[in-house]
Every structure is written in C-alpha cells, then in structure tokens.
Length: 486
Ligand code: SIN
Image (cartoon, rainbow, N blue to C red; front, side):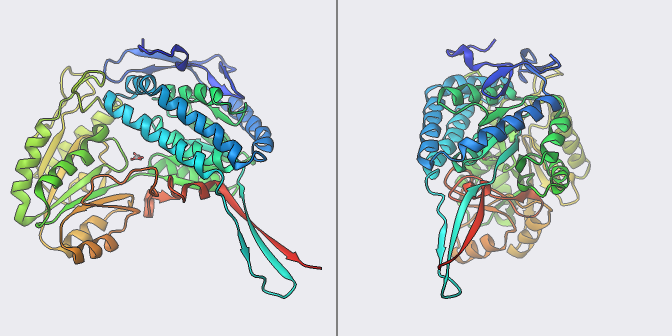
C-alpha cells in the first residue's frame, strides 16, 4: 500500500462528470510498482461506453465553462495549483510507486506539473484578440480568440502528472473542457489530480479522466467523435502518426509531442566539467526515459578520451534502486519490454564495435527492471543507437572532427525535438544553434524544459507547442468579425 496522508488521493474509479465511477463492464486492470512488481491498485477499465459518455458530458459542460470569464477560470486553476503544492509529497509518492522514478525526481515533476497550472491560471485572462484597420472606409475588423471546444488528450507514463497538467491547464484556461486518457501503466497520478480539481471547484464534466487497458478503443472514440475538436497527444511517433490519420477524418486541430533522438554535442573548447555534469543530467534523468534525453553524445576528437574518462566515473556514482530509498538517483525502467529493448540495442552496439566503459547489464535479480547506467564508447553511425530512440539509461558516445561533420550527423534523423551543445566560441554558438534542425536547443544547458519556454518539436517529433505564452494558442481558434459601419 502507498503510505500517504490524504488517502482519498488514491482513486481506482474513472473520473467522469465529477464522480469516480466503475466501468460499466465492471472490468478492472492492475497497476504495478515497477521496482517491486507488487500490485498497488486495481483500476476501472474504461471502454467505448465510458469514452462516449465522458465526451457528451464534456460537451455539455463546455456550454457553460466557455462563458466563465478568464478571471473566474483562473481562480479555479490557481486553487488547483495551490492544492497540488499543498499535497505534493503525497502526489510524488503515488508517482514513484506507479512509475518508479526516485522520490526527489517525482517531487520535481509534481512541482513542474503544478507550475503549468499556475502559469495558465494567469494566462486565462490574456487571450487577447486584435483590431485590424479596415480595408474599406466603412469596414471595421475585429479578431476574437475563442476556445476550440472539447479536447481529447492522451498522455504517457514517463511523466504521469506533468504531461497532464501541461495539456489540461491551458485547455481549461482557454475555456475548453477535457477528456483525458492517461497511460495504463500510470493512471493513479492522473486520478489524484481529478480529486484535487473537484476540491478546487472545477465544475462536473469540465475534466474527465478515463483509465483503460484498451487504448485503441478509447483512442478510436476520441478521434472519430465529431464533438471532440482538438486532440493533444504525447507519446511515440508511431502512435502519433496513427492518431493523426484517424483525426484527419473530422479535421481536428492537433498537437503532437512525439519521439526524439537528441544530439548532445561537446566541442573541444567546452567546459569539460560542465559538459560531463550536463551529459549525466540530460541522459539519466528518469532512467533515460524522456523524449528530451540526450540519445547520442558527439564529442570532438581533442577531448574525446578525457570526456569518456570523466563521464564514466560520474556515471559510476549514480545509485540504482527503489525510488523511495534515500540516495537512489536511478529507478527501475517501466516494464520488461523496455529493458529488453535496451538490451537489444546494447548487444547490437557491441557487435558493431562499441566499448562498454561502465554498466551494460541488468542490476540485481534476473527479473529486475533496473538497468545499469551504461556508457558505450566508440559508437558509430551504423549502430541502431544512432537512429533509434533508446529510452533507457544508455549513452553512446561518438567521436567527431569538424563542425560540419557533427551538424550533418546530428541532423541525420527523422526526429527534431531537443538538442544540446557545449562550447564557448560565440560565432560558432550562433551557427550551430541555427543549423540544428530541432524545436529546442540547449546551449551549455542540459535542460530545455520549463513552464515559461515553448516545448515542442519539428520534423517527425511533432507539431504544436506546450507551455509558455504560446501554449494556450493550441486551444484557441481565431474568428474575424467584418463589421460594415452603417
Ligand atoms: C518528455 O516528454 O519526455 C519530456 C517532458 C519534459 O521534459 O517536459
């Protein structure tokens, strides 16, 4: 059981129309702690019936919610933020138990997630339109921004709380209502947010949460419903493409935050200590299971061996284990197939000549989901790790000679989410920042994620931006009023 103060934060029903309810089929599915493999909950397994009913209720609630002023919506969001911060330790424990990330990191995610709610509580009253000088003497033109309507959101297991608030907060601030399907691996954090939303005064039906073990069934209802006007998805590029095809039939507005293959480039003139610390942070956060984790480390010839040595000793210091144990900085991977995928990538790299300088295997019992933080030196472009999103604690390190060569390698991927580079030469900083075909570039910074900056990708990493002043635009539509003055 999860040791929390607010026991009611642990809900197992679907959150529909402001109530926690069982699935009409009475079916449930288990939720496991990925560290211990113990079952920690049994959650309502929603299907098409619940999805349709949630969408209908969201549509009804939209008729009222859209007429609230931005200030009124903002006040409720602010209260939701305050409650998330007041119960952050409980929320973080729930998160660690179902997802595995260390408690400190989970607490960081809860604060990060709550910061979107705080930000968009403020933005709710700033959805400004425009007045355009008329093109004819009798014409006045006004631009209004209005909520798009019912939003369907599908969120991943790697950030079970923050990826929800990053979508729901701007949607609610804009005046939309939401039906959300969290990952079947981590539904508890989502449901806990539902409890606090009700307590904050969110009217019934404005937010609905559908746990399910049958994602395609709910996804089909969401994408085919004519009442749903917007689809926001965070997850793999493969699933994103499928959803885009399905959403095309009813021409929905879409936001897609998909996979990444982030380069992390270290030039000869970089501050080596900072580059090493940055590489550890960027690679091993959440056991390497984030879309913005550095996937390929490119280090210039002149400092390659020094980097490998320092990086390897820093990685050896990372402690693996139960996320609830003090001092643990790398928790388990989410499930067996995630570990198997990492094992296959490491084998492929070794067959093609990579050299392991640390890690390279499962840690502990044979069934353990802990995978040792791993460094693969002498990586080459024919290895699968060059093309595939690793999504695990494995860092392949490639050697490069010139700026042109590394830009070509960094951009040689269908992905375009996050990228990073370390160096001091100002002219080169501009050149490289402009040449990288990515939605986000960290310059001497291992992180690009914050509420106040736009998060999102180009190429097959998706479309749309989350967070920042741009995030709310994804939930608004523009209407022009052409007014002939009598
Ligand atoms: C992710 O989507 O995996 C990254 C989330 C973030 O850093 O905001």
